[in-house]
Image (cartoon, rainbow, N blue to C red; front, top):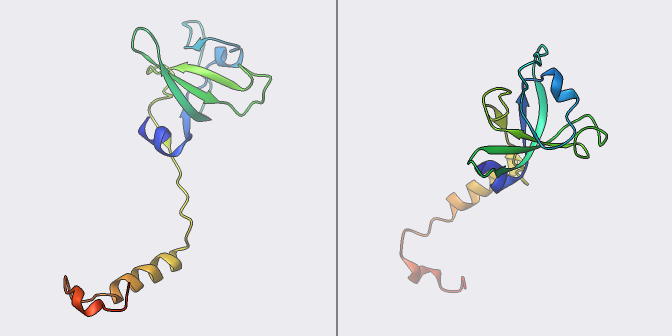
Length: 125
């Protein structure tokens, strides 16, 4: 939750079940008569909400287009049955190259004025 709040959506995975294909609205949870497909399904987790009973509903964006779910989105209950809240990866963009970061660090290291001796800084205002 912290990563989504701080940096935006994260990429997650879940176990796909047959009833997930037919999801159209509401809170998705695996039904007892559904069965699991092989592998994992990659989704984008864009947010969450808390239900009245305290359970977490993850708001996800699927890759199947706007015709699926609620215009391409779904609310998935945060329980262990589909594993949506087990793994996620967030990305952050560094606006500098590694070379730029090392150069800036070297510039900062080379401006050592000898501790708290601010008297030698005349003219650096």
